[in-house]
Length: 323
Figure 1 (cartoon, rainbow, N blue to C red):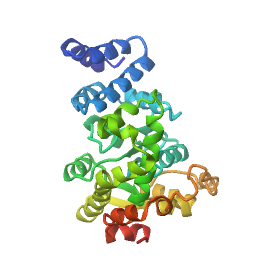
Figure 2 (spheres, rainbow, N blue to C red):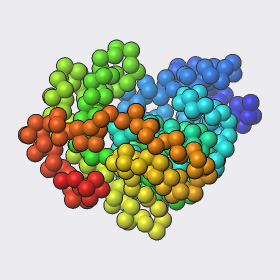
Figure 3 (spheres, rainbow, N blue to C red):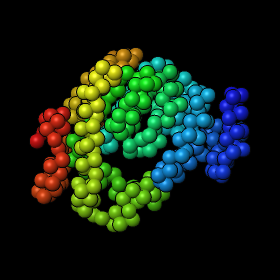
Figure 4 (cartoon, rainbow, N blue to C red):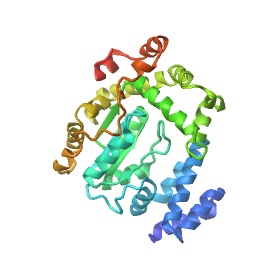
């Protein structure tokens, strides 16, 4: 065990008043897999409580042992890439929810033989953990996050040496339809660990809403925020063009030319990859449902179409070439 890490763990253990943290740290000495599993359970518990104090503890645990950082992510994400990445590119994907985030990041991880890693805790939007960013920049990996478009976040990334990122989006109207389907499926599964997060975020009454009413709910409470999220990144792309090279991509581009999409994204990061690995991607769109780009036009009522379209600015329309 890294001696400095051992000292830090002992210090945290002796000072910690949190039984969950204490138990997780004690488990490190017997089983790395148990340690990673307990850390992950703690993360979800803190997220459900909207408690961000766990960030500092995570920072202390990982900052002096980057190998543990990758072991943790391999254990939790199951990327199949153990230890150090074989591609030193730091690939940062900032995505709108329900825009094929998992599909894209997993494909890139497999093409580049590079592990999936986290730099945020919260699913939407995340707060940066400094040691994770330092390790990510130094050793590489593939990060996908729904990071908030704030001055603080982009300045933090720039200050840690990151110079490139991809912001991946889809039509927010289709995104909230997909999100409504997604939350409905989670709420039907009593064992899903995200169920408590959904109820905590939207209230217990949300579980009883029909799909139509869930769509109404998200038009009123979610759509503006997701549209503002896209607008925010478009603004930061322009404002920080000299410090951060932000590439804007969309689900439309992925669906229309999948191999071209991945080739352009990987080239943006100067990532090492074999172009032959991209040929097998063409036609492999089983991940995407038929009508996934504009299904909202068929599902939304006329009233929902009118209300939701008020939140789609010209800047956003230009990305998708829709009205």
